[in-house]
Length: 320
Image 1 (cartoon, one colour):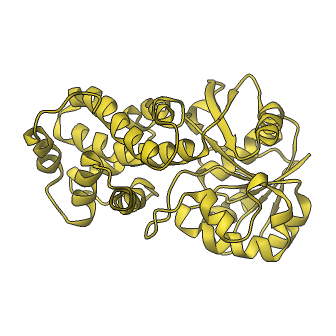
Image 2 (image 1 turned 120 degrees about the vertical axis):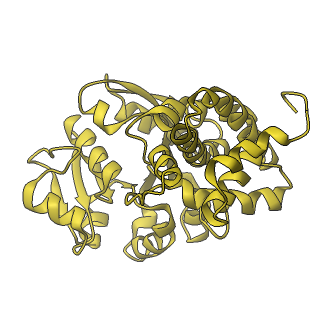
Image 3 (image 1 turned 30 degrees about the horizontal axis):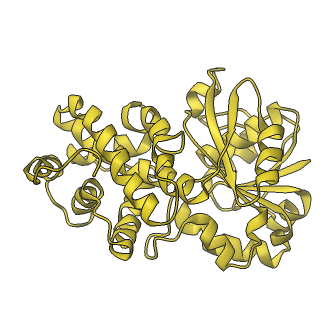
C-alpha cells in the first residue's frame, strides 16, 4: 500500500516520518513556493523530524495523486475545500482519503468530511485520523493512543491495522460526527487554557476540562452524534496535549494573547471558535466557553475578564 501525504507542515512531516519508519512507501507533497517544502527538499529535515532517505518529495500534485493508494491530507483546515477540488480534478476522488487535521470550515461550520463530500468524494472512502500526541514526544519514542474514524467500518479497521505500531495504538471510531467535532473543539478549549495560564489561574483548568467536555458533548448530541465521543480520545483524551503542554500551539496562542504578544504559528482554535458559534446558532445549543473565546478573539474582549464572567452565570445542574 502506497501513501501520499499532502502537506509538509508540522503534522504532515510527522506523518511522513511515521509512515516511512513503519516501512510503508511514502511520498510527501508540498507547494513549491512554501518555506516548509523548501526546507524539507533542501535538507531532508525540519525542526520536528528528519525524513527517511527513501521518502519521495514533490511539488507536483498529479504525481502525488497518481502515486498513492491512500492520500493523507494534513493542511490548514481553511484550505481544504480548495485543495480537495484540485485533487478531485486529478482523480483523487477514486482513492482512499484520510484527513489528519482538526478544524471546521470557518464561515459554514462544516465538518471536514462534509466538505469532501460536498466536493464530490464518496464518503465510504473517507476517514479521519484524530486524537492526542505530540510530535516532539513521538519522535523520542514516547507512545500514545489515537483514533481512526470514518463512514465504512471495514475501511476504518483496515487502516487501523495497517497504521498501528508500538508508537501509536489505534482505536476504531464509531461516531464520525463526534470525532470531527470533538477533535476540532479541543483547540478552542486550548485557547481558554492558555489565557488561564497567562493570568495565573492554572487551577481552573480542571474545571475547564470538565465543563468544556460537557459543552462539546451537548453540541455533538444536537448534531446527531454520540455525546460520549466528547469524553473519548478525540476530545477529552486530547486535553493534556492541548490544555497543558508547552508544545500546544492553541494553548500558547491563548497565553501570548493574554500577554499581548503576537503568536506567529497556526492556532486552529481561532477559526474553530467562529465555526462553532455558527453551529451553536444552527442547532440552538449554548456554548458559553466557546462564546467567551470567540469574544476574546473576534470582539477584542479582555481575555481573563471574559473567562471570569462565566462565574456570573446562573446555577444549573452539572450534567444539564
